[in-house]
Amino acid sequence: MQLIIVFLHVVVCLALILIVLLQKGKGADMGAAFGGSSQTVFGGGGAGSFLTKMTTAAAVIFMITCLLLAFMFGKEKTTTSIMEGVTTTAPATTSQSAAPAAEPSSAPAGEQDKK
Image 1: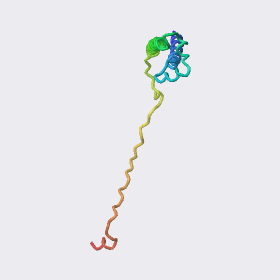
Image 2: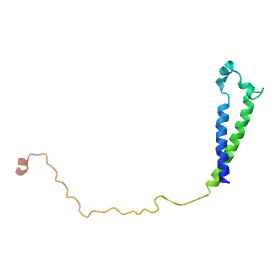
Image 3: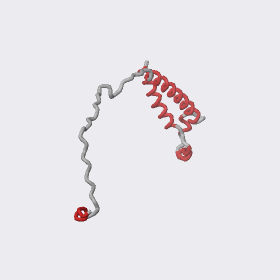
Image 4: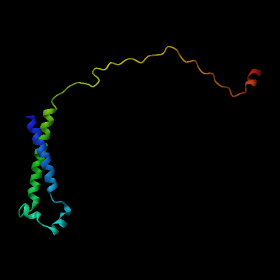
């Protein structure tokens, strides 16, 4: 059943792309001035109404197959993790503390002894 819906979904996707590409755009009037044969292919009414209905039908089928696939493949609720087999170790603590560094004085060495 899932395979049939996936196949139908792919076919409808491709059909929807082709139907949208076949439709006449806003600037297609200039192309009709040179050929004008697009009106005769889809009948006297032109390609507008037929392709609009086909686009609507393909879009509805596409949405239905999307929802069906989401419900079919979304039922599996697994609680797996990619960190399942990994063990963590605590960082090693050092027991020795570093000796504080001697502060350098701004006075010359000879003047420190005089005080």
